[in-house]
Amino acid sequence: MELKVKKYPLATLEFDEQKNILFYRVHQDQVVEEAEIKEMLGYVEEFVGYKNHYAVVDFGGNLTSSPEARGLYETSDYINTYRLADAFLVRSLAVRIVANFFIKVTKPKVNTKLFTDEKEAVKWLEGLAKSEKKNGTI
Figure 1 (cartoon, helix red, strand yellow):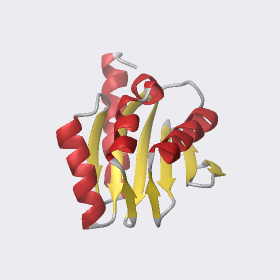
Figure 2 (cartoon, rainbow, N blue to C red):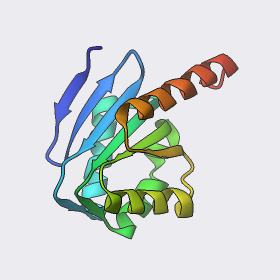
Figure 3 (cartoon, rainbow, N blue to C red):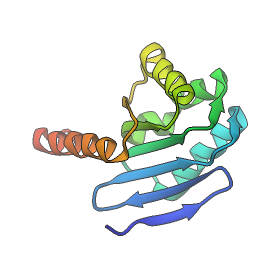
């Protein structure tokens, strides 16, 4: 598997063109506010472009975000237009609680599921892709 990779100030992005999966690895030890989420969304537009894709969003274990930042993500035109599904990858209880709250309370328009294992996250996205291709929805 060959990945296209680019490091940005707030995250490292990897894209597997064969699987159509973006791996969005948020750098740790930061607080994500509105300015940061806008910058991060810009990374995806620049890196992936304007095409439908799946994503593993790796929040790691030491990251916090404001409700306003989460709200911007949830209402992002780019995410809601081009993101087919989000697999949120978390590595600590604190990040898991925030991500789980986001999924259960905000109910994002994009199909979103929480994982602690990257292989399981990729497996879920691959299953969705296979199902959507079979049904002709992508």
